[in-house]
Image (cartoon, rainbow over all chains, first blue to last red; front, side):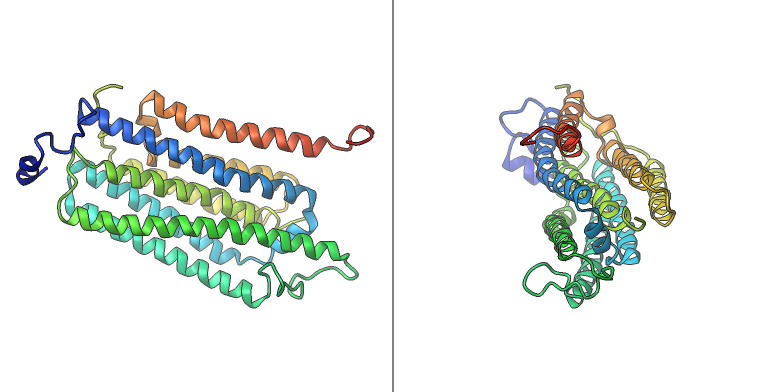
Length: 230
Length: 103
C-alpha cells in the first residue's frame, strides 16, 4: 500500500473485524466459494433438466444438437480456456506485485472474453436465420427430420433450443459481468492498488472467471458433442 | 484460520502445463465426438470434462493450495449437485421397470 493510503487509514487494507491480512484474505476466499456454491446449484438445475430431457427425448435432442456449428464451438472453447490462463497469470502478477503484468493480463482476458461473445453472437445470428429460436417463428425446416416424422420430434428439438439459448445466454451474461469487473480492476491495477499484501479483488475475480470457464467446460460437450452419432 | 495467505506463488510453468493439458483434452474430446463409440461417447466426453474441471479448480482456482475449509465448501457444492443429479436420474431411468399402477 502507498504511504498516502496508510495515512488515511492506520490499518491500511485491514478491516477492523479481522486480526491479520491473511485471515481477511482467507475469509474473502471462503465467501467467494460460498457464492460459487450457489452458482453451482443455479447452473446445476439447468444441467439436470437438460440431461433428463436428453435421455427422455433423445431423437429430437440429437437432431437439434447437430444444427450447432462445432468448429465455432471448438474455437470458442479454445478462446475461453486461453482467457482462463491469462486470468491465472493476472492473479499471479497480483501476488508478485507486477503492476504492468496485472494490467496487461486483465486486458488480454477481457479481449478474449469479447472475442468469445463475438463468436457466440455470430452463432446466435446463424441460428436465428435458420428459425431455430424457440417460439412463434421456430421452424423445423433445417432440422433434416426423417420422412413422416411425428410432430413431437420437432417439439423435442424446440425444447433443446430452449435449453441451449437459456444456458448459453446465462453463461454469456456471466461473462459480460466478468468483463465489467475486469475493466474496473484494470483501472485500479494501473493506479497501483494491488500489492503482494493485498490483491484479494484480483484473486476473487480470478475465481469467478475460472468458474465461468468451468461451466463452459460442461456446456460445450453436452450441447455440441455428445449427439454427433445416434 | 491460519495466518498464512494463499500468496503461495506458483511458477508460471505450472499454469502453462495445466493449459497444455487442457488443450490436449479439448482436442481429445472433439476428436472422440467424431468417432462412433455408441453409448460410450457420452461417458468418455463426461470423463474428459470432469478431468478438465478438476485441473481448473485445483490449479487455476488454487483449491489445492487452499485451506481445508475451502475444500469443504467447494466439495460440498459438487456433492449436493451429484446427489441431485444421481437421485433424479435414478427415478427417471427406473420408471416402467416394474408394472406398478400409478408409477
